[in-house]
Length: 445
Image (cartoon, rainbow, N blue to C red; front, side, top):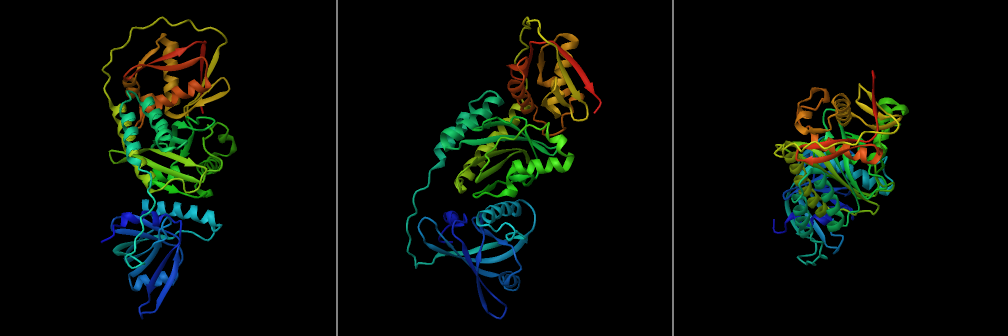
């Protein structure tokens, strides 16, 4: 093609409706408006299939179509000659388009009408200007590459996972003007993602969870593809999706022990990018904004690169050997003050400090193991390796993310507990710090 399809990506953002022309088997033409033209790659686009309309009927018998799109910056009309290939009704492409369509539908008040039935994939045969070769240079878009390079260098310079997470979120604010972001890790065995770091919210939400497949974040993780929405879409607001899921699973009583998710009450632009390593999704990088159409395709591309580096850094630090020697034990100050009851509910490894909920799952099992060993032997120095080898912690056999779970526990203690904490003492080593007497109480359920 004389005009690269990638140069028209701003025309495919849904800012201006597109039109499609098809022909019936007898040559009768039909022209209709399109809700969504999606860029797949340099040679393919996908169109939204919502109704069994005349357009749909035509392409099934005559697979040629012509689509006209409009550049929102220059007003230039472009024609795409297309050949219909197939319809996808599930998978990453379908879910991505369904999320984008939900945003468009919510913004136009058509949520109950716009329901994606399939993603029709077409090969692009030709691209031409509808203005007889007239071209107008579009306004320059921000160059994301220098900021992305600086951010990747900042992330690569960190020596531990906590610093990696903080550097990534800080760099999004400094280099991309993204003020609201979070990083979540996947607990594949539990079918949930849990928040390990956030930026720009009144409360961190560390330890908050979202089920796989729920909201923008859950769908991005389940399908392994970036999900980007430029308008408010209620069915993809993750906090709403989480509460509905929890209510369905266990009723209102279970919700009270959940850590509140951070998030904007009026989020109008959302972008969730999966962290992938070794062919698996390990987490999600999520950003949002109160402004409509805040994130464009170049933001998505940049964050996809960052997500790849984050996934690799997390995996490398989780799999690293432990070269630093065990530090000399320091004399710990004897605990004093009122005794704190550490209560564990065995079924979920939920931990309560007196009556206050702390954490659950693998992080809860780790805290129970550390405090049990501390009370039994007085020991305060521990290693990641011994936790990996302890079957009582019930780490998943693959994608265990032990380092991320330790960060989660460390940050929850820092937020919720003034008398106990975890501090790093070297690569793969940490110390439990306790300043008040502890009493352990294990509950059967």
